[in-house]
Every structure is written in C-alpha cells, then in structure tokens.
Amino acid sequence: MTTSGTGIDALNVNLEDLQAELEATSRVASALQRDAATLDGLRRGEQMAEVIGRVVRHSRELRECMREQRSALRELRDNVARLRTSLSEAQVQLAARRETGKRR
View 1 (cartoon, rainbow, N blue to C red):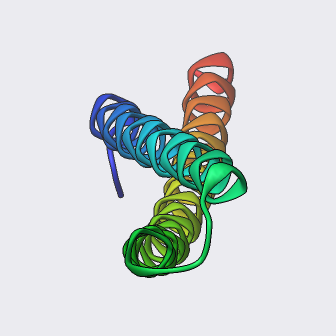
View 2 (view 1 turned 180 degrees about the vertical axis):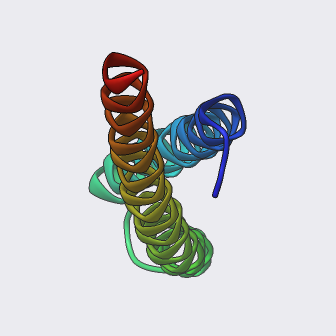
C-alpha cells in the first residue's frame, strides 16, 4: 500500500512533467506560427524551401510533445487512481480500528 505522502509526491512529479510538456508544446506552436507568417511573405525559391523544412520539423516536434503529454497525463491518472485506492483502504482500516476500540 502506498502512503499518501508518496502518492502525493508522485502526483506532484506528474503535474510538473505535464506542465513542462505543455510549455514545450506552446513553444513549438509559437515557432510554427512564426514560420507560417514568414511563409506568407516569401516568394518561391530557396528561402521558402528552408522555411517549409522548419515547419515540417516543428510539426514533428509538436506531435512528439503531444505524445509526451498523453503519457504524462496517463501516468497522472494512474497515480490518482492508486492514491484514491490507498486512501480508501486507509479509511476502511481506520473505521475498523475505531469500531474495535468501541467494543473494548
């Protein structure tokens, strides 16, 4: 059985991971917006190919950030479920102890 302190620590780590991934996604999305704006102002040619390459790279990075977010969120959900179970078990044990104490 996980202690609630350990469970809460795990949740804090999961939340920090998720926040970091959200920030990374935001940075990549901003880079995509800048590159798209740059594409708007370019004529055909070498410059456009370079910017298109950056857009493709940023798109891949964005997909990877999203996968990491899903993973962090899944882990967070698992840890919340484990903490709930642990707390429920602790409540049952506490109730049983109280009941035993009343009988004495």
